[in-house]
Amino acid sequence: MRIPPLLHPAPGKDGSRRFALTLQTGRTAILPGKTTPTWGFNGTFLGPTLRATRGDTVRMTVRNRLPETSTVHWHGIRLPAVMDGGPHQPVESGATWTPHWTLDQPAATAWYHPHPHGETAQHVYNGLAGMFILDDDTRPELPSDYGVDDIPLILQDKKFDEDNAFTGRVLKGTFGILGDHVLVNGTFDPHLKVTTDHVRLRILNGSNARMYNLSFADKRTFHAVATDGGLLPAPVPVKELALTPGERAEVVVAFEPGERVVLRTVDNGVDIAEGDLDVIRFVAAATLKPSPAPPAVLAARDAIVPAADARVRHFVLNGHDAINGEEMDMSRIDEVVPAGAVEIWEVENNVYSHNFHIHEVAFRVLSVGDGKPAAYAEGRKDTVFVPGKSKVRLAVRFGTATDPKWPYMYHCHILRHEDSGMMGQFVLVEPGTERTVSRTLKMPHH
Ligand code: C2O
Ligand code: CU
Ligand code: CU
Image (cartoon, rainbow, N blue to C red; front, side, top):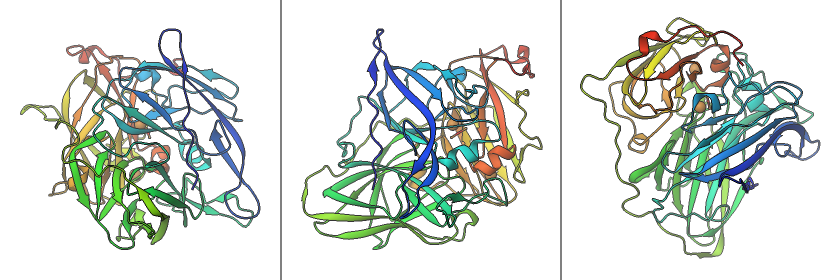
């Protein structure tokens, strides 16, 4: 299996870390035979892994060498809205965009991908996605040697045509693409040579629509150690773990010398989890080096607790193309949120599967339908599955980078739905100024 290279930042004069990403087209050997036309960052397919530490100022140079406009969004990262890389920060073909911000959030596995309005599904499907690892000084004793016992797994399902090109229409049908092969880090039929007795997997669902319901073929127990937004307070033993598009999980798996085992996704009857598919084969060496088992305690508990009188906002996911009856409109601000607020967002779904992602924030899932979320999903998150005919309640903690003119997005991360208009916009403002904020943006405002 291919491991995305770490992109080493250049030191900036001001002590910042400078990363350069170039969006480009190319061809990649994925299947035997013909190469596949693909898009990538700094290469022909997917992107390098970015890595930085809380407190770092990062300076990005994003060059667009695609034949069309795109954007680069930093999914799971708290930053000012104008740096967010959503649909309001287009980078035209040939142009360069230079966002910068200071990282201030707990260690987590985040990612980056394009977000041009109406084109996200195609740009991501073509191959534009990469991981962004954030560190802080908690550093519990977990496997952490990148590419050795700390392994990124970017899961993306694809369909190929007879010329080995990606096929399938990303904006057709109820969900767009549900592929019949899972690529891991862009590798077809991958296997990983395991060299240590414990391995941490940073799993990113970078697929357009598919939900992965992951378990090992031998039903072994493994430990969930982190969700989207960072470490869990303590490891949670699991036999299976589900991820919808955009979600991440970190897990630690124990291996025996010489063994082989397959991680797969199992059809659990959910519409977006269709089919049983192998994800990756692990092949353990005859002797394994020691690597830490998860410690009893990972991080201080930092539950997001809303006040008794917290503001409650309701969102109804309509069909596949609207929220609260309205299609996404880049010139309309849907919600105005006071900086630093902890609110309750209720997301109701009366149809088939959706999920819900909010930019900038960390949230805790309070309930899913009448129940609690799975124990492994009780940590800080930014994306959550909203099963058909159910309601999820979220305690959402907003940041403090106010800007009434530049919005953040919330949306279904099934990209066919996101592109079709199942997305809304919020701005973060100084508390007390909510009523003075214009609900209309002049477009384009850049
Ligand atoms: Cu993964 Cu609005 O993004
Ligand atoms: Cu995002
Ligand atoms: Cu959806």
